[in-house]
Length: 454
Ligand SMILES: Cc1cc2nc3c(=O)[nH]c(=O)nc-3n(C[C@H](O)[C@H](O)[C@H](O)COP(=O)(O)OP(=O)(O)OC[C@H]3O[C@@H](n4cnc5c(N)ncnc54)[C@H](O)[C@@H]3O)c2cc1C
Ligand SMILES: NC(=O)c1ccc[n+]([C@@H]2O[C@H](COP(=O)([O-])OP(=O)(O)OC[C@H]3O[C@@H](n4cnc5c(N)ncnc54)[C@H](OP(=O)(O)O)[C@@H]3O)[C@@H](O)[C@H]2O)c1
Image (cartoon, rainbow, N blue to C red; front, side):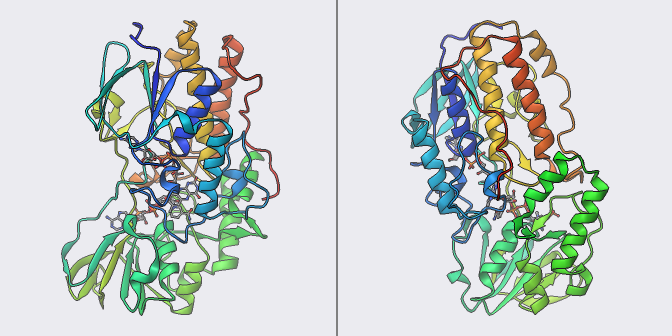
C-alpha cells in the first residue's frame, strides 16, 4: 500500500472504546489525536454528555469483573454491578493512570472524513482539516434514537428514552413505555412508584432473566458455562429453569410466551419488572396500533387512556461523518472482519461495534484495540503483513456462539464474549510471534480478567 503523508492516527470518540484505543496506541508508541465532540470523556456513561442515554438509576447490567479493562480492575469496594457514577469515576481513573486525558481534544467533533490514496483527511466542526495515516472510529452506537412509525397523535408527552433522566416527570401520569429491552424495564421500574398507572407495550414477547443468581451476577455463571464449553441446549435448560424459579412461567404472570428459544434473541435482564407485573403495578400490552388523542390503541384491539409515551425502542448504528461506501456496508451495517477491520484498507477500523451477548463489552473493546495497535505498529515497521491482509478479506468466523441467532436488527452486533476474545487473542498472539513489534511497555495485558469473586 502507498505510504500516507503523515504518521499520525486519529481516534474518534473518548468513550470506553476510544479510551481503550488510546491506551493501546500509547503502549506501542503510535502518534495519535483522540477527538471527542463532548467536553468530557466517558461517552454514554457520562450523564453530563449531551447524547448520553444513561439515566439517574442506571447500574451496570454486566458485572464489574466482566466489564473492567484487563489491565485495570474496578475497585474491590465497588458493588458487583456499579452505578453509572462509579463507572465514570473508573474511566476517569483509567485515563489518569495511563496518562490518556491530555491526549484527548475535547469539544472537537468530526464532521467528515475523505480517503486519500493512503490515509484520510478529517474535517472538524470548526472547519479545520487534518491529514491522518489512519482512523479508528469509536463513536458508539447507543446515542442515535430509533423511533417507530406510529399513526396518529397523542394529547400528551411523547419522547424517546434517550431524553429520559429521572422519573419525576411521570408524577401522576398514565404512562406507556414501548419496548421489551433493558431500557424499557429500567424506566418501568423507575416509574412504578410515581406514575398513576404504568403500561408496557412489547410487540414481541421476550425472555426475562434475573440479574443475580445464587447472589452473583448472572453473566458470571454464563461465562463459566461457556468457558467449560457447556452445550447450548444445557445452557438454555439451566437458564430457563433459573428464570422460572425467580420470575415464574411467562403465562402465569400475564406475559406471552416467547416464540423463540431463550438466547436466540437478546435476553432482557430483570427480576423487578416481572415482579411488578405479578403485583399488578404494570399492565403488559402488545404492539401499538395508533395514538388516538387521549388514548392509545393496541394490536389486540384494546385501548388505554394514556398521557405520556416513552419509546424505549433502541438506537441505530450511525456513522454520519463518513460515506457508508467506505465502510464496506451491507444493508447499512459495515461488513468488517471481526466487526473491526476493513477488508482492503489498512487505514480504517471500527472499535466497539459489538454487543456482548452477556457480560460487558469493554474488555472486548480493549482486545480489539490491542489488536489494532499491533496491526498499525506492524504497518509502521513495514512488516510483511500479507497473511493478515489476506485473512481480513475472508468472512468473519462465527462470533455468536449460538447466542442471538434471530435475524433482526437488534441481534446483528451480538458476540459471545469467550469465543470473541479467543479469536482476538489468537490474532494478538500471531502478531507477537510473527513480528518483532516494538512497544514502550514490557508486558501488555491481553487476557480477560481472571475469575475473581464478583
Ligand atoms: C442505559 C444503558 C446501560 C448500559 N449498560 C451497559 C453495561 O452494563 N455493560 C456494557 O458493557 N454496556 C452497557 N451499555 C452499552 C454502552 O453504551 C456501551 O458499552 C458503551 O457506551 C460503548 O462505548 P463506546 O465507546 O463504543 O461508545 P460511547 O460510550 O457512545 O462513546 C462514543 C464517544 O464518541 C463520541 N463521538 C461520537 N461521534 C463523534 C464525532 N463525530 N466526533 C467526535 N466524537 C464523537 C461521543 O461523544 C462519545 O463520547 C449500556 C447502554 C445503555 C444505554
Ligand atoms: N442497566 C443496564 O445495564 C442497561 C440498561 C438499559 C440498556 N442497556 C443496554 O443498552 C442497549 C440498548 O438497550 P435498549 O433497551 O434501549 O434497546 P434494545 O435492546 O434495542 O431494545 C429495543 C426494544 O424495543 C423494541 N422495538 C424496536 N423497534 C420497535 C418498534 N418499531 N416498535 C415497537 N417496538 C420496537 C425491540 O423489540 P424487538 O426485539 O422486537 O426488535 C426491543 O424490545 C442494550 O445493549 C442494552 O443491554 C443496559
